[in-house]
Image 1 (spheres, rainbow, N blue to C red):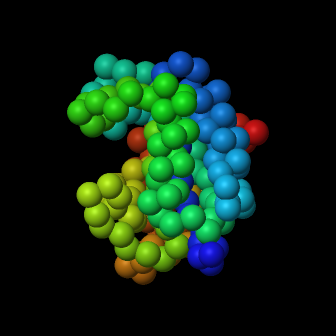
Image 2 (image 1 turned 45 degrees about the horizontal axis):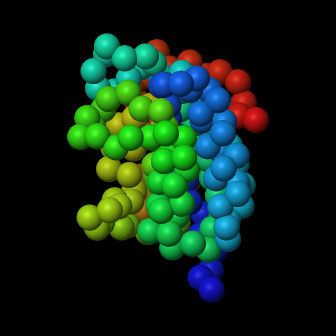
Length: 166
């Protein structure tokens, strides 16, 4: 059995009652085998990254300890997305019912056809850095970057901290 690794997962939704989608995803992540939730951020309301002709997003970050491999965790997260009704399209920044992204998997750097960790855009996204800093203020990325410093230097783009995840 693999040793436990702390993984950080970004959650986002802007369709079909996004608060409920993100909250349900957090509950389902808590049921992933060989894993347990160690921290949940508040919910955040953020502007869409891509086309602006879509609803704002609800985002959060969840930290788990898991003995699953990174790809096993990805499979579990994609199963949660699929059960929520996620349809994968080529529309990279389009509206979606649920997005569960592995932001960090321990201190590993992973690059393959299915997964890139650290998540390729996390340093540029306030809706990742602000909730991540909330639950792990002393966290450093594999390249040594401090998430707190990155969060303090990024524009908040009008993000609004909402309620705690339940």
